[in-house]
Image (cartoon, rainbow, N blue to C red; front, side):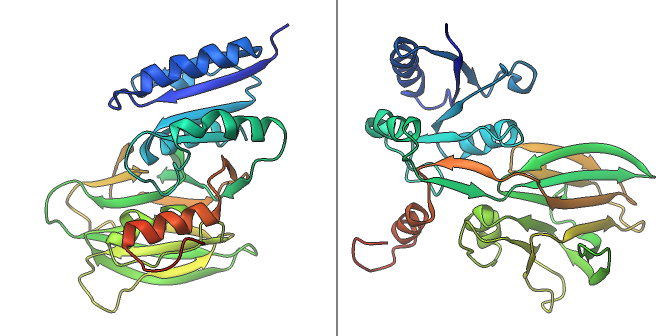
Length: 287
């Protein structure tokens, strides 16, 4: 009886994704795995089979981000097969997917636990949005060259609140260590080891140069208020893929997700190899 299930996420913009998905599906079904294939066009959240054993991401880092928001909360590991340029989190070459899968099946694969963030929007005491992200949550102006007015606090596990100040900027990035090499680093933020328990709070082009990126413990909640004086439209974006319009007076609450996202064969050493290659750091072959 088939009782092992695999979900394949594919990026249809990658020409080889469908062909590789069919190959993986055929091989795994011969090994008594029930396989399902979903692309970005599907509303996969509404049709996920139960009791999944593992997911595949066939594409680039963006495909992994898409898969993480669906399978991360379910604690289902994802094997990231890279079909594009060298990625920071999608690092398994197509030629090595079966070898990596075999290692996972035998319990020998390295599993990297990645911090994810839960994001809620409170509007007048009512929750109007709930989501999660692997890379970052970005609060920014919906228009061009518009300043955003935000008040930011950090709430400790004991309930104490630390006022981090008022930000006048093009926006604010709250990033995980995995997301530190994305939008955050482009906005001048630090690069953080992907398995650290920390969160980056990074203003985008702040009006006051004294507003600099801050790294805080991951067990603190980040509470951001869109100030009532804010007039231009504001947008919340998760992982660059999910958007939600905000209103003045909204409170955006960002906290650590209860479970780590399980990423197969994309450990911290693979991260440093990708980092060295992308940034052109000199050095030997060892991470």
